Image (cartoon, rainbow, N blue to C red; front, side, top):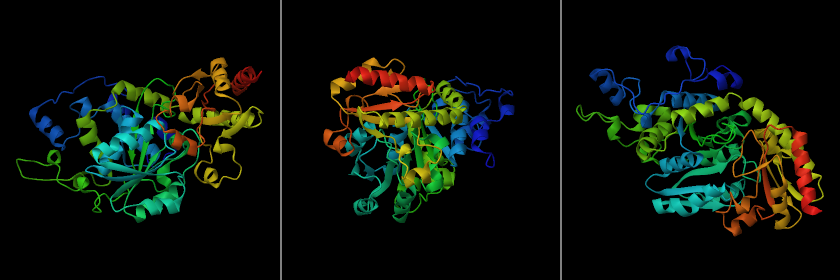
Length: 431
């Protein structure tokens, strides 16, 4: 479906009804395993010469539709669906820096990502070099080292909504023979497709805006298929892989040999999902597919409502600052990368005490106080006490993340009701 537009692909890409009894909705193949039929077909499936399924940990027809649909929406060659957004990030970093190396990343990333990068990856021989301003290109160039394996960024930061200059960072990465990895969770592929600006790998917590209904934990890794994994810096992609060869005939193959442009995604599927086991089940994949069918309408309304709410908060005397780059009139990165809007998430700093923040959280009636974003229902949370608690205070301070900051995820309710709810809660806090 290479020629169809986004709104056609989100409904049809990756699915052939004739292959599934002409079912109009993607069937849920809720089966642990699939019969081989006969010995010859079994040899072909296991050997990779015959298309088919054997065991859901290795692949499932429902999940495959989701993977192909996301790859089509992004403009990538392939995708892998996994059990969570953190699994997507973890497998991606391990896959690119396997055996040791360095990752370059800004400090404005999601709390759990920062915690993993700071405290866990080093135990696997992967060091992370942090810098503070995501778009400080001189600092990025300065921090690159011979064993740097990738640059990792978030397209829209959580919760500051700072926009990353993807094209500029991609050029730096490619000039140094390494890929640019972009977490595009907040915008979703409806608002931004990072591959158009040179990104190589895109990761998602599809729990959020892609699914859009707060009812499933899921993650995605999407492969652009343009990066040269055989450039000498990534031997794991060019070394012989036992499972891809044939021991009886003595044939050997690497991931680049067998999968070419799709080597990165294929290696995550074959080595990490198959062996570490963090797959996305067929029922969960079905829920993501159902959510994806309405992504354009959802995001269009949520962006409009988030913009109106950001403007309301900016005019409120009890609000010290609003973090929503979508209302910055002279921000060139917004116009370049996100002309349809930056997403449904914003934050604001209360011009008061933490007790007044607590009153707002306790007094809202429509907003749900819980740690998620991208739901059809509007959500509210205090990041430093919840989602970003893993971040040291010294790093939080660099990104204006203090105990007076509240994050909002705007859903599909009437925007006037949401504004009225925030207004009454703020009034209660400051009466």
